[in-house]
Amino acid sequence: MTFAVCTVGIMPLRAVSDDRSEMVSQVFFGEIIEVKEQSSNWAYIRVNTDRYEGWVDPKQFAIIDELEMNRLSSLPLFYTSDLVQLIVSDSSKQMIPLVVGSHLPGFADNMLTIAGEKYHFEGGVVASDVKTTRKLLSENAMMFINASYLWGGKTPFGVDCSGLTQTVYKISGVKLSRDASMQAKQGEIVNFITDALIGDLAFFDNEDGNIIHVGILLGDNKILHASGKVRIDAIDHQGIFNVTTKKYTHKLRLIRSYL
Image 1 (cartoon, rainbow, N blue to C red):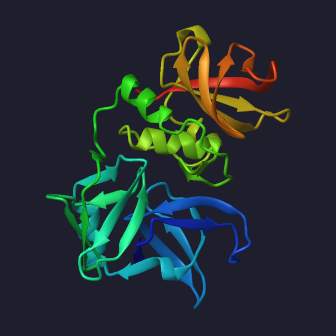
Image 2 (image 1 turned 30 degrees about the horizontal axis):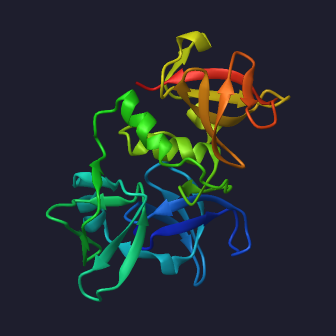
Image 3 (image 1 turned 90 degrees about the vertical axis):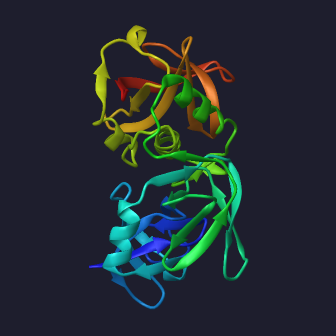
C-alpha cells in the first residue's frame, strides 16, 4: 500500500486520466492520499479525508512511507481559516497559496513538517475538532457568498453545492461525505421545515427521486447554496424560490441536522 500527501494548494481529482477530463473533486494541501495505481503521468488515488477516488497528476503529491503516514495521521490537525493565505517552504523559500480548509497536521509555532519538508505559515488556523455551533456554521458559510459555481470545486474561487457544504462543515468541526447523495445519509432527519435550525442542510431531488442538490439553511426562510454562484434564496416546504427569477428551482426532499 502506497501513501502520499498533497504538496500543492489544490490538486484536481479527475474522472479519468486526462487533463481534459471532468474534475470530480479537489484535494487540498496536506491531505493524505492512498495511491492505488500509478503510471508516469497519472495516479489513481483515494483521499483519506472522505474516501473519494479519482485520477491526479503525480507531480502534485509526495510519496511518504508508512512511518510518515502514521506520524501525520497521529498529529493534531488544523485547517487554514483565511480565504487564501501563503505557506512558505523553509528550504526553497517558495510560496504556495492555500485556500480555506487546507490541512496543517502538527501545526505549532507557525511551523509544520510534511514529508521531510518544513513549512512556515502565519495565517489563521482552526483546530479540526473545534466545537461546532450554528453561529460558526453560518459565519463560515457566508465566506463563500458569490463564489462562482464549479463542478467538483470546493473553494471560494469555485465550488459546487456539496463541495460548499463539505468545506463549510469541515472548518466548523464536522466531517461530511463529498456528494449530496452521501451527505443526505448522514446526520438526523428534521421532520418539518418549521423545525429546521440555522446550519441544517436541505436536500433536493429530481423527477427520478435522486438527490441532486444541497444547501445550508440560514433561518428566516433563507438558504445559501451554489447555483450558478453561491447565493441566498428563499425556501419553503416546496423548495427553493429564486429571488431573482421569482420561480421555484429545486424541489425539497428532506432536511438533516448534524449538531
